View (tube, rainbow, N blue to C red):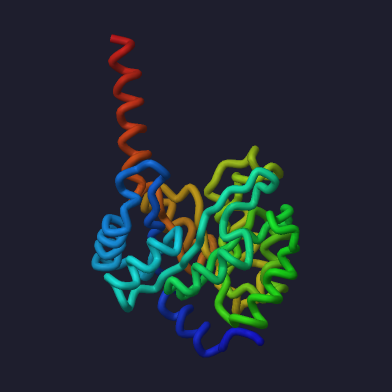
Length: 241
């Protein structure tokens, strides 16, 4: 059963031409507290973000409680020793993210083997049949993006460009991939530019290159990374003096 088309159109209207902020924090960071994540998400939404991208059912539930009307793209990062797929890798993670309050579930839509052995096609078929929910396909290439659209994903994002074995020689943002996806994806599939957007000029370029919406994370909410980077550069200068 396909996701309701009117609901998909409503989602598209809410996000088109807008900024989605990825509000996440690394393991071990004090920012991973659900209260802190929810506060950051509320600040983003209050200042014009059209939605937030959140990791883990706990954080999704916290933001849903604090910001009932927020548009939430949810995912759950889980690592497995026998698979490189970690963004919402299987059925259990999809169910949990959706139950926590996500409006759209994001998952790894590359062709890499999944932890449970199921193919992407089998997972998506089950999602469509049993949940009928909007899926954002995090992809790394034109082939995976087109395949995801063919399998019924409502959104396609350039999230994994530069982060898989076949693309790790490339540096995001995925400008070339973005333009190719724009040319070849069906017109009813939302194209999201995510990964490496670190300035307002990058965000503007993404829109000009065809993105329907832009996801920015580290450059806005990545306090741990940003502070570490500043300190590293300052310390390098100090060591030369």
